[in-house]
Image 1 (cartoon, rainbow, N blue to C red):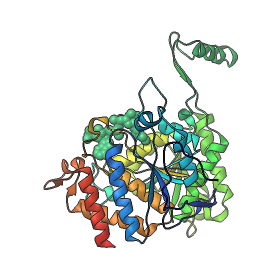
Image 2: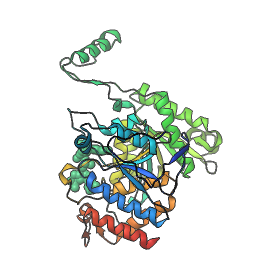
Image 3: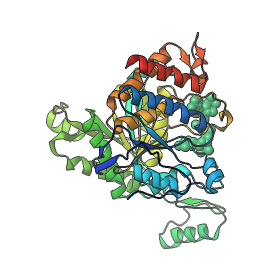
Image 4: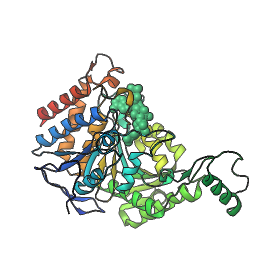
Length: 421
Ligand code: NAP
């Protein structure tokens, strides 16, 4: 049933994307879908419209059109609705299934909790997926950035991001301390004096649905392996169990998924054709392996905090925050979002790089099955960047580049899309 909206309008010409099967993300996508967009805070008002320009060009160049439905969160929502995350926004994302957002500012230490986390929780977008690959022409701190081609699947709803924590000096934290020390027997484990305490839940349900998404992705996209990244040597009953449940999921798949142990014990390291190998690595080791053995890794599945660190470390190899895209995925619900934040010091200057937001939109088009449009975007970005027409962040790292504004860069990429189509 269509939602009723208080302060935003549904575009008249578009049609809604329908979900055929939520668990397998099977969609019916019209050629004129309605797509909700949140520009976001800070540089969101720069990169949001820039991404729209490029995504619309890719849609038009492949015989389609996107009907944007602008919805609000953060600063712009406070102005329009006097609240951070209005129901209009949640309803639009639920009704139209596939959406895109820019960054939202989160105050550190005090104030409201992260709106990004709230959105992911309200919509049960339990997977944060980040494909990290190198675009030709983008400068990188490593000598072979082209070897980086990993996709991280990060659990989005639990672990330390569940937000179960108590502030030092409160009555609640002292109750928790007393329970831990006296009832649970961890006497003298917590230092005397003020302390903050947080809880890290990792459930079988949360782990298994995340690992299934990662393995399904690997099978669908002909990837060779899925690596479970954990710190189970230290946190045995949370991170360690994440690994164990991950392997249980691998067993559900039959012959098309094989564990690394079985591969070596029974097949001398030779995987069956088209099979996905599931292995696991400890998180600190993995942080160096992504640098030292980059080509060996493919899809990574991990709890929330490991995913936060690992995906940014992968992103650094391909050019950093101006480039790194992401998406949040539930069952039949999708929200694209760049990895970067709202970079308040650059807000409204038409200066920053919109590539991360454009590439996030590209993941969205792939999710919708518009692979031809997605390919055009990648090709046009590479052509524009290799011609050294770039935004400030890339221009300062190369010689002979032309520095473009956010909107001019997006315009060049859109023109290149029409030329290539
Ligand atoms: P940030 O906004 O990502 O910015 C950090 C630095 O990264 C910038 O100063 C800039 O570096 C570079 N950068 C980021 N986006 C860029 C772009 N599009 N083009 C070129 N360079 C870019 O991180 P932050 O300053 O830590 O966070 C600011 C706010 O954003 C915080 O409130 C944070 O909570 C929030 N945040 C939101 C999200 C989200 O909405 N998903 C994610 C992360 C952070 P240079 O100064 O070197 O040019």
